Image (cartoon, rainbow, N blue to C red; front, side, top):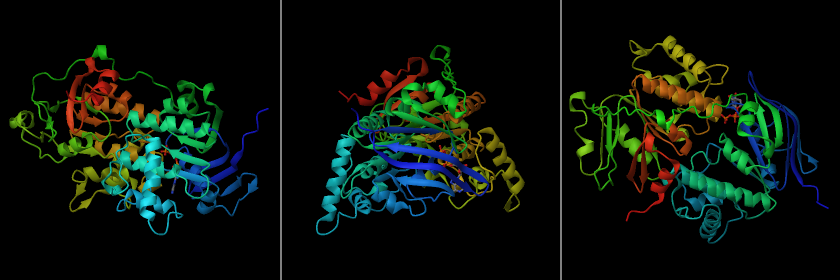
Length: 503
Ligand SMILES: Nc1ncnc2c1ncn2[C@@H]1O[C@H](COP(=O)(O)OP(=O)(O)OP(=O)(O)O)[C@@H](O)[C@H]1O
């Protein structure tokens, strides 16, 4: 006879308001040992708020919280959640950038004290990294701020699963693969399966529905602060899941390879660039109206390439094409204003003290100037039009940017770049945390804007997104190793060039 699974946390009728926003409108949630629970929903549906209540960061306005069978309502907070074996990996990472990996491990594991704690903390974190992400390349003495966002995410995840004193029973993973490349993401998801099969529990929040369906035992769908569907994962398909979230599944919306018409008509490219480590003659070029993709494993020079282009001074059109393509070593040149959608919104994208409207308008401040001041009417109009266009969910665009959910903050960064006068838009894995419905809208906007003549250079860790590109450059070890127009683009070719070592 099979034993009844252990019920470890139980929320009942939970409600939470933020001013006028009813973020949770009576949610029930039961978590049992030995299962991976998927949590999906549009941006702003209430997923993070629910997880903040479960982890004791937020007190609910109403509802009960049980740990095991004990009712802890009114006396539940972060330390009670921690003592009950709950750990979290949230979208906005919590590591201290100026400390080492080992020192960050110590913060979560106070048991690692006394003589030699640094060495022991290093050993704990590195052995967990080895277990989850073999070949991770992280050293216990690395300063966290020097690590790529993917490696920081790996450390954060390994830290959550590490045990020193007290058992870990439930790990909440909020968009854990959003900055990991396909290979590392797969390492994590297979570890999660092993972990729950060994009796642990996980909650996986993701907008990548494929990974929800392949990894979770049960899926809960949230919409506007409520649970609208909850079933075993095997009872959902991608289409039914998208439907339950309130969006319409638009599958192959990207133009098909067979319809491909090159925009390289002999005119000079708008962007040319070569990584500093490039030893051969390969160079990146992006033309008017083109969407150019950067691919390859995370951290192989794609973000550095975007920053190199971003810091290039616009050249005059007469000299277009005369520089980087023919140069030895690195260099970049552009012939028009450039905007960047930053990859790490926490540190490089969002101005945390400003309103949503100011965050959107900042790149267009020159156009909105009236005398020495910014014209508030123009700032409002711009923000309101983008709020409607990509559905930024907020009761008021003058609210602080941090009142937005993670995905909605990301939409504001898109609005900043797309609403500006930049003819060249650089995007550093920009769809992180953006829901499926909005992604389709943004893909459509990118295609429309490219048809009007804008140029996009787009680094993505999602192989599927490369289908939106006219041309793809694959990076390995800081160099361009493959140059694929869309009619030659396949997932196998991208993966093969990402891995094959030079002869
Ligand atoms: N601190 C806050 N102040 C004001 N409003 C907030 C705050 N935190 C969340 N909200 C609002 O509550 C609602 C739910 O947000 P939440 O972050 O839970 O959504 P989510 O489902 O996690 O979205 P995403 O997929 O974008 O991460 C949103 O409308 C959001 O703007």
